[in-house]
Length: 291
Ligand code: MLT
Ligand code: MN
Ligand code: ZN
Image (cartoon, rainbow, N blue to C red):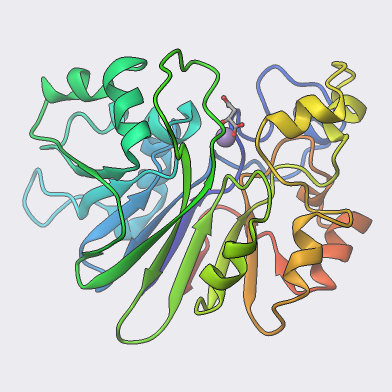
């Protein structure tokens, strides 16, 4: 299976347009908002999440170039991990196509009918299909498994429907190899260890390096509990994701959804070195993986 890291930054991207924090002003390489594309055969491609940067991301990836017919595209569908705007707005940018098959948890599909009526909006432009995810299913011969990971709702949600609001996906190629994509992980649930046990590569929520990063980096007075409420497990600390990664030697871990405050954006930072020490990586936009 082929996987393209189309974007690797959190909502707002890197640098963020309204941010003058140290990281945003040091001239480090820009990153677009996180999403990936995967393909069993290199011909049909499926997104996991659709970032507001999707147009630029598609134009930058030759594997996603249109053709062979004048209005053909290799993009066939999208799986959504959640209903956050940085993971769903991109679907509106894909309205020029014939429509996609979208899979998402029931609460997310509800949000995209009720709170942010994306389904109704794009239905006027093409033939879209919306499938709730539950249990396991297959996409182009690849097996997809789902793990609910949190009930963190996007800020804009007014509905009171039951979650899960956030899931992780595992894509298993019967020919060998499995990828887990979990860009929103509020905590590390015990079931997550079992879920990733059969994965060869895990792409993880790397929003924040430390639990108090927002208040330190941006002087916005976002205290640690408020940062935690944003639904992203920090990388460092005794309960951070690095500590959990250490229990899975030999497995490949990549961080994505990097917030603009995260010091690992700087390859020369001690924080990046601490991550590399447990073999976790922070590949840049455009990286292609063969899983
Ligand atoms: C998040 O990841 O916490 C959200 O995407 C925040 C946002 O609305 O950008
Ligand atoms: Mn986000
Ligand atoms: Zn910043």
